[in-house]
Image 1: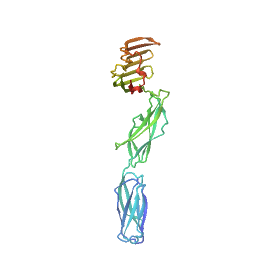
Image 2: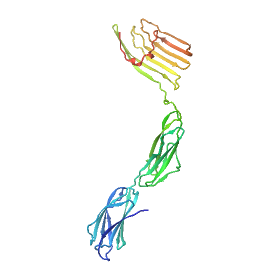
Image 3: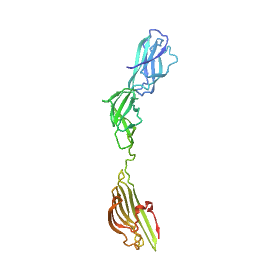
Image 4: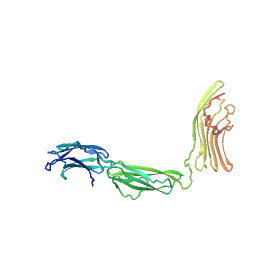
Length: 370
């Protein structure tokens, strides 16, 4: 149901009662307008005889529209035609669709002539979703209930289909019709699972899809989640491994030699309870072919738990090929030691007992002068 805003324009004075009908013609009429816009309309009034004070005109506008300026002749008494200009402001709340503007001419208190035009107000689509009353936090195992406010800021009703990827929407049985400038509250609930973490965040979302559009409106929020009891802060297992290249250069006795060796090593626990420990070194190959220079190779693996201590390796760390030829020994040992069973197997063992695992990897770049 439309509401009309009457604006009365007194047109003029004194002529006789016998004058003929008055005509009005509307010019510069827009076919399409937007809510909140302005447009100009010209009304041209004509009469076969000079107009009298018994003639006036009323302009009727849709609700929330108004005439903000008008321009009329300074004197129209006795004129047979006159032109009036109006600047019309379309209300920001103007509804979309066809709207009618009328101009009605009265003579001697009775309606004498009516002229109107139709213009279409363009549709504005603006649906917003706002999360309200979010809890500061929630505990695992509890229910997270998120409240959303859906508001239609557009100028036409919207039929919306609601959905969520987490939980369910309370009391939702199908699409809802949201009128212009109307709002509705929606609640989304979900169960917070119990995990191994001490703290994390839970996401809650709501999507509203208009019936005649493929572009939905989406809103997602996060809420902190805390555990019911203290848990490990770090659930990840880390095993550090170092890898590098050693460069060796030997100068002495009129001879020079240089070479590269790869060095890969790692040590640490392989379980979160820290019961199984591994230490390994892979260092080689030996590229030095000088009799006075010993070997620097080592390939070793060491495993320890609460009951066993196992070592496997090849230690080619002789001090000098001339002084200690074939000084390395091979073999296997086993037996109880310190309330645990120890097993050792090695291909060669250095007579001076050097173990590269005790040498930091920063030793990797070094030049030796003999």
